[in-house]
Each structure stands twice: as C-alpha cells, then as structure tokens.
Length: 310
Ligand code: FO1
Image 1 (cartoon, rainbow, N blue to C red):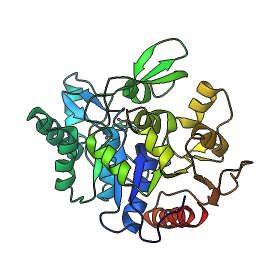
Image 2 (image 1 turned 90 degrees about the vertical axis):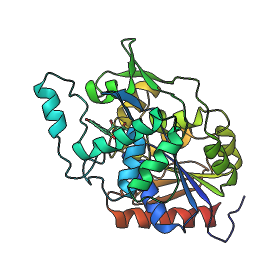
Image 3 (image 1 turned 90 degrees about the horizontal axis):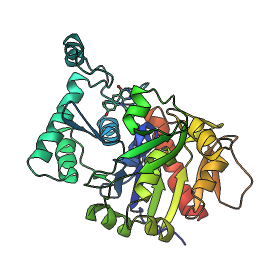
Image 4 (image 1 turned 180 degrees about the vertical axis):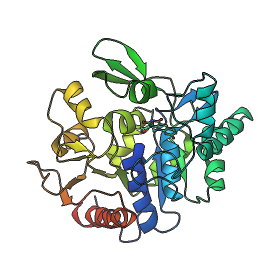
C-alpha cells in the first residue's frame, strides 16, 4: 500500500482531549477539505435536560482555540454562575457545566428538538464557533458506553468517570444501543487515503467507533496509523493506564496499544523511549502535544511517516 504524493485525504478517529489535540495539529497542517474528524459519542448523556456530547465539545473548543490548556475540556476562563445557583437551590452539581459552555448544549438540544440530526446540530454549533472543517459525530443515534465494574455494577460512562471519579475498578466496557454509523461517516471513510487513530482511549473512545456497522472494514482496507495514547506506560489525561491493568491484566505500554489494534494497524507513532519489539512500523518521537506548535510538529511527522514508511 502506498500513499499518493498529493496531499492525502485524512480521516481522524478521536475522543477526549488527546484526540482533540491531534485533530487540531492535522487541521493546521492539512489543506482545506482534506481532513474529516469522526468523533466518539459513546460519552453522550442527558444532563439538566440537555444533550451533552463531551467529546464533540472538546474537539470543537480545541479547534476554536477556546479549550483550557491544562484541563482540556470546557471553555477557557469560563464562569460557573449557573452551576453555583443550581447548587444553592439544591440542584445537581456533580457535572460542571460552565456558563459559556451551556450555550453549546442549549443550541444542540434545541436543534435536536426541532428534528435536526446530531450531525446537523453539530454543524450548526461548529458554524457558530467559526469552525469550517467537518466534525462528524460517529452516529446520529444513542450508543451509550457502559462501564461494568469489578463489583458487577453497570454504570453510565460519565457517572463512572466524573461522579465516581473513575475509582471503581473496571471489568469491561460495553457499547450499548443499536446505533449505526452515519452515512457521512461511512462516506468519509470510503474516500480516505489515510485513517489516523488519534491518541485517545482505545476502550472508551476508539472501540465504540469501531463497533458501529460498516466502520471496521475501512480500518482494514485503508492505510491506518495510530498515535499511542500512552507515554512511558502512562496516559497524559484520563483513566487508560489503570483500565489496561484492570481489564487486560497487563502492563500499560505502547506495545499494548499496538496489540489492541493489531488486526488493522499499518504503523504506530510512539513516544521517545517507548519503541517495542515488533514487526509493525514505528515512528518514535515526542508525542506530548499540549501546545499548538507540538501538535503541528507531530501532525507533520505522522503524515511523513505514513507517506514514506508504508
Ligand atoms: N470532566 C470532569 O472530569 N468533570 C466535569 O465536571 C466535566 C464537565 C464537562 C462539561 C462539558 C464537557 O464537554 C466535558 C466535561 N468534562 C468533565 C469532560 C468529560 O467528562 C470527559 O473528559 C470526557 O467525556 C472523556 O472523553
């Protein structure tokens, strides 16, 4: 398999802060029209009557330059007056919706109530934020991720991650619902020259996308390169390292990421010092991408790697 010399058409699969930062790098490097982001919606849930799509939000705010550098999610320097007022009146306050952030959830929920699809609602929110590149929810239907804990409870993803602070040990992750990928997602995958699996949590960000009908086939057919979400066995953000230990009972490492994706992977980008014994092509580089200039550097290196080594 080879990549065409022209600028490749790239589809990036993502969820969470790492995925959003990788998409931002690709977005800054690729020509207009050459990048489509497909984003996990397994984290979506209803809160205060609003449709919250945390991973779509994080990708949109990152591309719009609104995401806080440290925390990653929500809007930089947002205030939480509504949350504080809700708390004063005895309301739910475990999930922190910022005042400016609320506009996103209100606009999305209003569009959905007026019969827009989640794809259409996302395009409308993107347009309001000045984002012109396509950001596609993986599905227009509900497909909630459920965490099955070692003490045999089935917990909705945000409840486990935020309300219970990711503390209960995870036995397995289930993608529920009967949702299928959208026609827009399947078209983007069919037209892609390169699929990038962003440095997102494989269990709760990438596997839910793969589980949708018609998606996995394209990962096998196209050139697919992953960026490891683990650096020196640790995740920059989120619960991945402890999930690898509790679900797969093994050490978290870049090698584990490659094994998890073994059936379709054509190459993997790993952090300096994380190279592992394998026949899979590896690019070893600095994969910390908190700052925009590092996102651009990694995106350039990844595209070069995909072009020259595969
Ligand atoms: N994560 C938290 O840890 N605590 C929160 O209160 C929280 C609020 C929140 C609001 C909007 C949004 O788009 C994301 C938010 N997140 C919060 C992040 C989110 O729970 C997770 O990081 C993702 O679902 C994981 O990909």
